[in-house]
Length: 330
Image 1 (cartoon, rainbow, N blue to C red):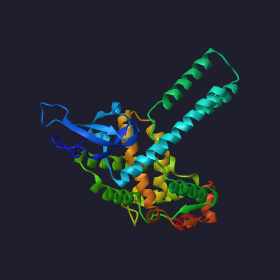
Image 2: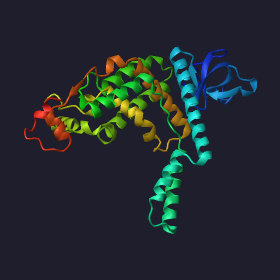
Image 3: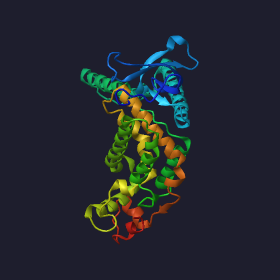
Image 4: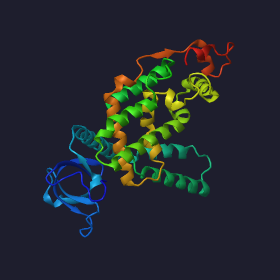
């Protein structure tokens, strides 16, 4: 929101306005202070949604408005497409449930059939598990936009590592830190208020924190763990070219994109309210759309084939020549 007493939108301006999770084209019909007696109070805006009846005209706070730019129009289109896909998926699950149970209920039924000693105690435990699962699914979800080319890159990445037994050459040509810095520099001129700048900084700091904590626990495939262990020894030793670095300085777009693929599940475990969830979803989706357009700059053009020694070590087989395998990878 703009500083008190200031507005970045004007009467008759064409804008995009959030209604729940979707951005709609709208026009500002009027502007006023929230408190008519306080000229320093925030502004609110009477908007008319294009194609909607006048009965839907609504006074909205500034944080629901976005400038009518090409980038925001693209985001609006993508959000609508994602919402429609989610609705179709929900309808399909609902129909399946009516026919005899959803996938989740079928899975639960399978687990229940495996219980050899039914009884009051097991039923209570089962009911508690079902309640916990249902509570998880009603939490606000963050359906982050994942453009098709990023999905394809994720599939190729998975095949290269798990099937072809290759690893990304590290350090990455552009690290996670550098990618996020590039994004911030590209995005800052588009931010119209100090509050929007603050949100951008908070989101980038959050991405860094999530990546740092999730890398070795969630984002790495098993075949990459030996590479990670050796890199970690180097940056923790405080010597050599990796001495003053960490995961954010070594890993790049491939692993960062994996984070965004798992982010919905991670955020579902937080206690964010719906408004915060929707804003975060918007910010993260902006980033994935930007990364999609810049993918040729940031993703590796080749993967490194692991040596036999590395393959054996990744499976837990002792290496007769310590250092040989990993030196070819990092």
